[in-house]
Length: 635
Image (cartoon, rainbow, N blue to C red):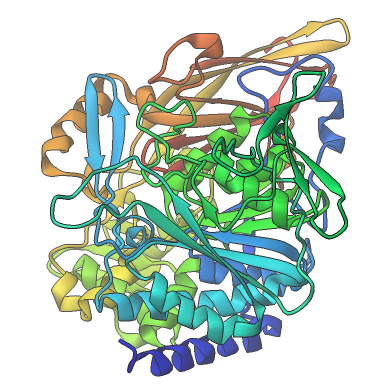
């Protein structure tokens, strides 16, 4: 491994340099804001809603929860966009707890009425859960190097990075950190000791993690007296404990040269050393637990954030996991950014922050994730038509002749009169897309009996657009979101042909139960009516779990919802969720495994028609939206 390190670091630097060069280009990575979350659990106080429109996040440095590959997320933060400036040099603290290359298989256990199912991680999420790399530690290091280089660009001159590791890769990453941040900027090797976990009869039990900290070249923030720990009482010390008139224990030390007496009160605390034995791992029944396997205790993050950031600092975590960094930064009054490639992670983090009544934050996603992945798989100069050809082949379609094939996106099913259209990953499939597909079905090559639209990304209201068209000769299917990752892993279309399944689209049904005026306010009632899940074949489940899932889908489909939110005055641009409910929010409904299906939202009276937007996320992380327009008072 030592022999491979120079090449790994060199390639990581080249990749990071390429990303930095592209930050100013037209094709730079961007973030899309999916939701402005204004936490209010299942209710809105009367005096709160009037402030909501002025309750937006800080324009320049908003708190952000980002779903997607952290390499792309960091690149987008460095690039900035028309809404938010670049974050280069603005982050005072980065803490990361990357996977430890443990070869563990972290499966998501999803609880449903009547039992639970195990969802295997998708290829996209293996980075967060499986910790399995094709070339072992070498590919792990190849992953971490460019990310660390880009994180350094985010750090301020007074910034610090903490990298949390264990014995699997710690020594190798330490060498990488020396190379990227400079050995002269090395601050600490913190040994975090704990006792929870299994023991061994063949070796000493491995009961510590290592946390390396480095500065970014300047004078780092260090509030040493903030994370004080109790001074241990040492009865056998030469400094005998005494008790003052107030009953406080103290110790005295006399300087032999000057005769000066120094008094140390035991309850004053002390700055911790670089070995931490007073913070235990979370146990299975700990009240802090939020259902995430690798969750770290809040006390650990509290010590790091208190020591290495100020109240006006921005704290970032790009392996967000259960959201502990964001939750503690929020509690300590810091601004924060957190990201993760796993849907379970972002779902848990959003619920956790809502539960803690956090200040408003943005929930964002990588703008053109599939485009970035296509560049990785097919080359930086790939053409969208090439990707469409791959999708058509995997679906079993034959491309149409070039003279009638629009950008290579049209194909047909052999022996059938079915037209197939593979959309671009940087295009949103909307109602207009479907109407164009209907026209193409009639006009292309003398007409077809049926048209199938294969899409990567869909408008949030696509389910209702499909319903409105009421066309049984139009079918809309989802291209597997991890297709490019799977193609990269398999290496050829032929190897994937029998594995890839295109699924039907999930969608939500909701309706307004009424708008009732009450003086200067009104109550908007929203009812969830039905939820149609993505085809189970497209979900990476254990085989034994499929029957159980189908039973819930058929008998209690709304039990599949994990989270839903309402914007009662949707402007068509930014979804401001001012009301949320989620499974486990038992304060009002007492049901641990179901969301409420009826919401009464009290808002200031509006004499004109209202547009209400409802968004929901199911237990597998798939999102749906309903927009209900022109709702009159008394409806």
